[in-house]
Image 1 (cartoon, rainbow, N blue to C red):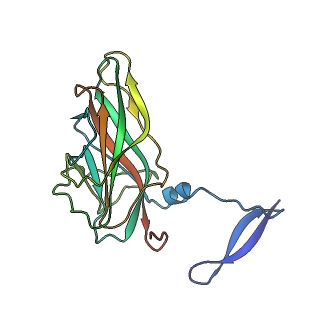
Image 2: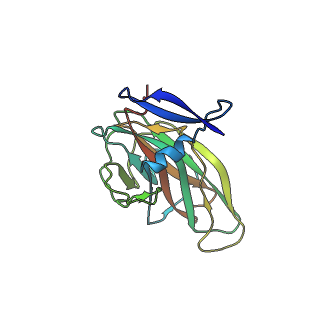
Image 3: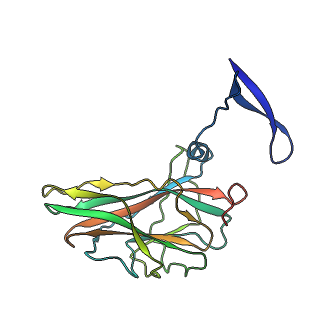
Length: 205
């Protein structure tokens, strides 16, 4: 049998919190709550770019930027890369570069489609997502496990490592992605899955 515990919301009104008869609260993961609120968005490049055979520096495969005027933090849930042109025996992995607040805004914004993860209309978005962007090298690091192309198959596979909120992009900050492989013959389209969470719901810093 469920019990109801009373609590107060941000405006001082009583609200019911569901719990078991023994007092164990029913708690949904924050990702489920944010998805239900319509905060979840996805965007992906449509044109493939060749992988690097060295650590990335000042050019990204794809960059997401959170404009300084925005009142939401971008909580990164996943990043992903699709191996459009595969090379037999090749291996590849995702690298990420987190750009701190005050980064220079991208000069383009050529990925304008936003997919909603709630099943509702995606609505408008002030985020900027641009391919092949010139960025500052704030430090690139590998993220997730490597992918492998066993045979020559077009298209190849995909990798989508979870970030799970371990990277947050506040207003005027950004995040870049690239793919490092053992051959430049492998090409990839990359993308981001994030939650645009109002600053009043999530404090950063």
